[in-house]
Image (tube, rainbow, N blue to C red; front, side):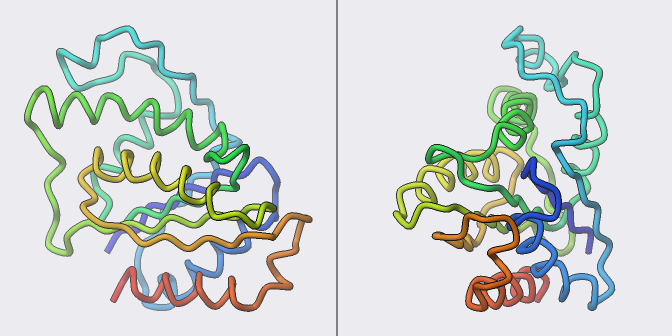
Length: 189
């Protein structure tokens, strides 16, 4: 199986990356191909709402999204990992998702969905936030759900680690680490 993972935190070696690495352990151990995108280091221009994708299903902006489009098309599993900022996914993740408007047009206007391969398509959403209230995870999942369904991922699991704020604090939350590891196992089972 091919697993495509998006690390959406601007903080290197932070809590989001720690949980993502934990979720990827069983994936890598099982020998699956992993393609990792660290969105903060990529050149992704925001969607310009130009309407070009409405006719073709293709975005006309030439940047690093081209590589992401190809990876999403060929993925069996997609992992989206993000910190929660102001009840939402990070700006890095949101910019990537907004550029998936081309997939939305392709699927809903042009009636061409991404075909599920022999393993089907499943997703995993990993969220980390300093706030302890569930509303941040709920709002973030609403956006992620729209993304996953747009790229023909019919179901996804959510693992949220709340009350985790300082850099590296995820390491002090064994339950969050265990949840991410177990979710990674389920993703490729």
